[in-house]
Length: 161
Image (cartoon, rainbow, N blue to C red; front, side, top):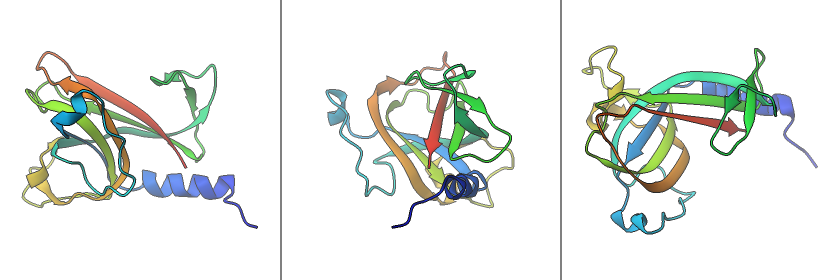
């Protein structure tokens, strides 16, 4: 019998951290408004991607009941200077990103490639800006969120490998 070691899991987290990381959002399916559908583990893309942003922060963390990083599930983490199996990802959408859209799905992609024609420094990417969307690592269907220009959206995840 073999097991994946903690150092092996930290190595996988390091491999993910070293990739280009995007959070994409999409409108999904309006039928999900009554009850979001369970995400399909075989999915490779969003149902209807609207746009995406780069990870603002990508940090190794450890679970810590007194940690300063608090996620919506009430789990807390502390930043680690050493690689761990837990990778904290922070994404920030600007005030005008996706305004007027209804967001029902989120996906974390790794290894996406932006077209050479896209202006350097552009932080909000449209599907047409991508040479390749990358590999869909995480997928979430959620209650509908109408994007308003008066709100900046920040989302955080911890991916545990």
